[in-house]
Amino acid sequence: MTAPAPEAPTQHASGPLTGFRIVEFAGIGPGPFACMMLADMGAQVVTLDRIGARKNMKSVAGRGRKVVELDLKDKAAIAQVLDLLSNADALIEGFRPGVMERLGLGPDVVQARNPRLVYGRMTGWGQEGPLAQAAGHDINYISVTGALAAIGPKERPVPPLNLVGDFGGGALYLVVGVLAALLEAKKSGKGQVVDAAMCDGAASLMSMFFDMTAIGRWTDGRERNFLDGGAHFYGVYECGCGNFISIGSIEPQFYALLRQIAGLSDSSFDAQMDPKAWPALRQKLVEVFKSKTREEWCELMEGTDVCFAPILTMAEAPDHPHMAARKIFVSRHGVTQPAPAPRFSRTPSAIREPVMADIAELTSQWKAAR
Image (cartoon, rainbow, N blue to C red; front, side, top):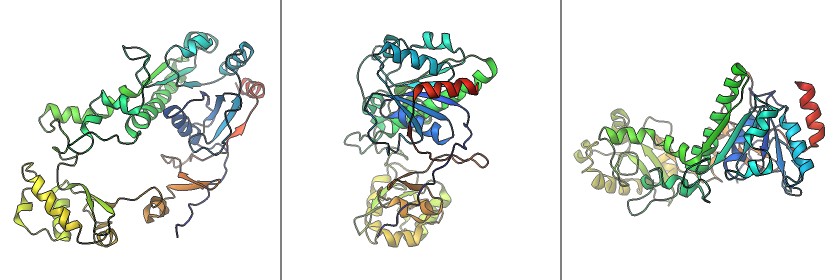
């Protein structure tokens, strides 16, 4: 039976961002994920949402917020939002370009009230460009960067969930940009707009592959390179039980250990870095790994320098000994979820309970704190 993840204790803000005040305009995908990270790290994040929208206060990405429900089409509500933003450190929104301006909450208006405010904007295509007003999702944003074309089997590209665009190229770049702008504002006293576009971030994530292409170490086409499933020593293999394992034995010493433990004495395996030999060697490894179960391969290889790991499902992952020892997954309200990351030695992050709040009371508190 699966053991439950440890219950996450309810804590007050203690992370490195304690004291920072951030206003989030409710959205989906990368914006809420970025604000989850900022809230985990101690920032006081206030989410402005539609009236009646926040029915589920147990959302993983929505954890740690103060939630205010209001009608942004109401001029009186907009005036309240501007008052709140007058004492905020940052704003995060994920609407299409121009929406915040039409609401009367564009950067010019808000920063006239609060010149040191950092204005974080999360979109797929960016604030300008031919596609800026077009609808899209992660799969579209990574399509135009070269990322999606490089992922999957040779027959066709495969979407890598929405990790590369929404969260890797979107949320994480938004967090980095907002934090950098907050640091700069501490020196200059002036805020600025952070234009975080998923296509920008996803392209940035491809930097190493553009570099390798330039020096002739990477070619277009899937399963032709050493990190895209082409190499026999870096990939996924099915075991005799139907489960899967992964190996990443790139370095010569790790490859030698793989050969030793897996019994790969065939001299054809000497041609580790010959792409022409990879298809035949991969097929041989297919048969080798099918000779044992995933558990048996774990007993032989896990914890060694083979660079090996079992491929676990989301249900299995929390029970893995390493995951459990580091408490990488925790439970809140019976929902298993990732714990805050990264970790800080002196000002640890923490998961806090979301609560409904009154905007007038928050504005008063923030003004007094200044």
